[in-house]
Image (cartoon, rainbow, N blue to C red; front, top):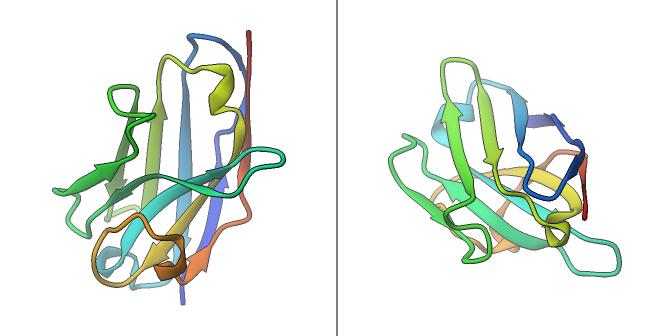
Length: 123
C-alpha cells in the first residue's frame, strides 16, 4: 500500500499556472503507475493524466493536452502535475492515485488515493 499526500493547490486567475505535488510513502512508489484525477462540484471524478513507472510513457486527457504536464521523481517518491494556461473549467479537487501495471485512465484500476488538493481558477 502507498500513502499519498497532495499539495500545491490554490487560487489563480485564468491563464495562470500551478504545480501540484504528490508525496508518496512506501518503497513501491517506483514500481507503480501514477495518475492524476480531478472532481469538480456536482460532477464525477475524471481522469487527467497518468505516467508509467519509468516516467517515459504518459497518457493525458484531451482537455489538458498542451497545458498540463505529468512527471515523477522516483528518487524523491514524488509525482508532479504542472498546470499552465489554467481555465475556470479546470477548477476542481485534484487527486493523485497509484496502481500496479498499465498507466491507464480507468479510475477503478487505481488502488491508493490521496485526499486531494483544491484548485480554483477565476475568470
